[in-house]
Image 1 (spheres, rainbow, N blue to C red):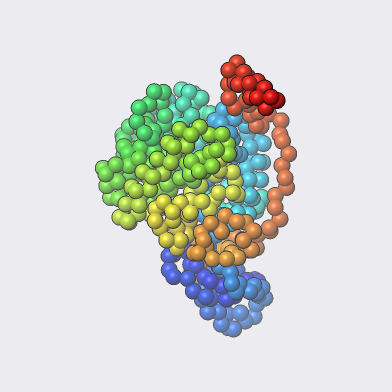
Image 2 (cartoon, rainbow, N blue to C red):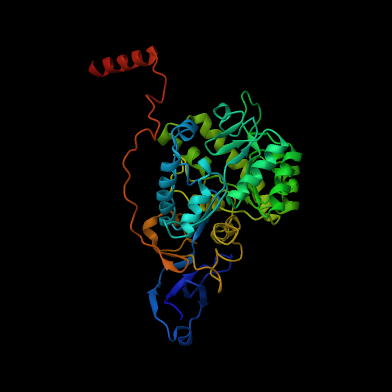
Length: 452
């Protein structure tokens, strides 16, 4: 027997494929999208239908965040992330945060590397409706070499810490890739670049050989699992593309050789510039050093040029926010990558929405099945009060999201309960600066002047 359906009527329909919007209706149920455009009385016959008047509203696919760290819980530092987290509590809090992501209009996300290998269990709980949240695809521990990733000396020379596992030989690489696939990951992630002391050039340094990258790809592909790489210099993007990686994160600091390799492979890229943009534009609110803010601003400016060239050459660009850190908290900044695509890359709002919907479905391994308002697609749908084509930033205003549907079912808009502090979970620094005698004397002199 056919179940109840939902009819969104007379709204501006943005299909997520980049086509011009049109006024129309969308009919769907739990089986998927049934009609887009004109809905006839015959389509509604012999079944209950919930009608929603979307006049003056926008009907569009749910957003897909192709780079979200749902298990990190917004750390202020790597020290907090690596040494102040507990596996059981981290899993419970990750479920809480997944609902915050959904409430922001994100109906799917990729979490490519998780602390304590939690991603598979959270994904399965989401799919089983044990906890509310978006669709999720996941990796396990990110593969690191002994050089480490972006956490430097906090990472061990072997074993696991936080979100990473250090592999020191070809046998260890193969064993770990196979272990993760046995666990049930959707992706295998490699930290192709990292940071080292006294580094002289921009970006990061490649810490994997081409042969080892190819070994990861061959091992994973043999078992039907794609590979994603964190790449923040030219050689890493070049070698990852040539080795057969299926997705690149960042791909900043590319040169012409790296761009040619990426274009030749047509490997999709998730630029993930939201973290850098938040620090560059709002770093003063969190007392970030001006020189650090300038470094990230330059990365955005350089990256935008090369990434736009890649896009013009046919490379798919996907939106990802890197939500999960103190600078990119859950439910707050998932929209901002679309804004950057418009303002920094020169995309149209329609192109940016496509990058955050139908193209980003690649990260869910559901390309051609969700992320677009097409008959037969999964019914992951938003109703927005306003027109994101006039102002893409309205997608960041949760008050504008009038309806969220996941798998054809309405999502409860009840906000998550407010959390209270958890003992030992957060790092509480004594101070943000070193308290010197000169600082105290300057304060005293200023106080004396005020009293004079």
